[in-house]
Length: 387
Length: 214
Image 1 (tube, rainbow over the protein chains, first blue to last red):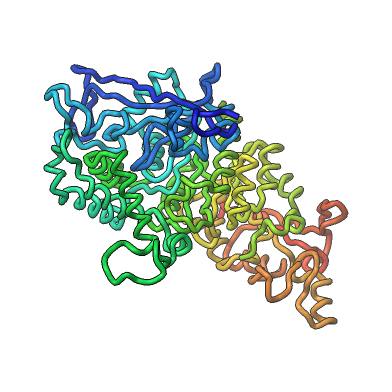
Image 2 (image 1 turned 180 degrees about the vertical axis):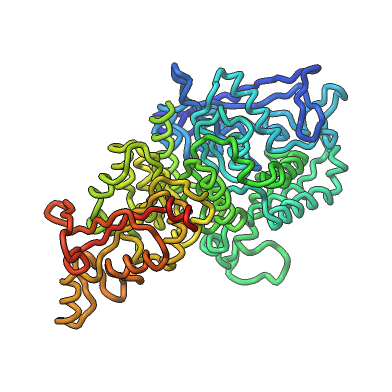
């Protein structure tokens, strides 16, 4: 039994891990962003699990979604109560088996958990970037990850994998660096966010803009726009769940009473749950990062960027496993099928499965046996083929 | 449509002939590939580049276990995005009779495949005829193992039906290899009066020639 000091850790945990940092693009060698603006120096926070093999052929890059971080698995310290965001999938003997693979996960640029983002100090100004931070795109995130992967001495990734925005990055990786990706696992994702998805993101951003504490993004060292960010998270959380899941988890049950109080206190369990999610989130996330990252998701559009999906995938050589979920209404299966069809037409090897689930968009973060089984089998055969 | 994974014994029919038919290193699409045993075997013996389409999530998972690339979907739609003549062989094995739109599926197969292998249980087989004639009930046997109310087979046909159909559509038939399944699943070629005595019909069609004609 491993232990982190407080909890006894199960044997399939990666244990205590340290977040590491890689800084590059120091002026005058700044990184050119899709917008044309320059950014530098750029720091990426990252974690690795498992060991890189002698042939350097077992590296798997995990790509996080909107609210994720470099901390995908294990615990950061002895008194850390929560494991990494994909701990259910990463560890010895787990889906991304750290006994076999060298797993890398980094925080995206624009993020707020160690990588350069709006909360970082602008070396030119000597204070936080705030809204002077340039708009970043999914392509920019991938270009930064490319620098990290090369820094780690890896010339070809066995796989890139991620859900939601992580899936967008996985697709972009295959397009931007076709020779560096042997296989890709985009989950619950899309080649472009739907109008409905953009609408929800915009409502989230508006909640932040309208918080008086936001102050045009210049709130560092002052009171944070917690009400706005918390509300944005509550809206987001609704979209990550399915109607059925909400019904089963909360129904119309009341939190602390049997009878209505006939007032506006939050009474229903679902209300308390959302409040709790909102509060939990503001403690760990930066409101400006939320604005930047949702914008990057909204801008992502492979069809517009390359003319068509077929054109986008023209140089892609990776093998694909694409997964969608029946109850995901934010990134519905049809959007995955659209990707699959374009890849198939291009003669690319693609496995696709639509997994029956009641848990909505976030299913890939949960302990879903089918997701784990399919990824683990796909990875194994990719490792046999390319490793 | 009922999952093809449920009934592996029946869909093994004709595997040996198909394996014999397909040349080394062909690009092969198996429509309704089920648990992927045929593709997997072809990959091992003939080093093919294999692709599968399967309706059930469980089928796709089992295919992934075997290292196959399988798309979960209905073959009645979604063939349109494949380019013409993009496969050396398209296989439709014991699946035609359960497609919703057999005409569409066949037309797409002829477009995307240079060759097509179509095999199906022959409703003209004498024992099927006898069952209907003497018992007056819908045939249920090893070929057609379902009760009428649960059968996925909604477009049953005979060898003669299919031969006529190909003639009518102008689909060039390269070979007919109708067969019966003997002990241990070995296919025994049907030698005469196949529409009466063969359990299964098998047609190898020339999609490339057809594309040239049309």
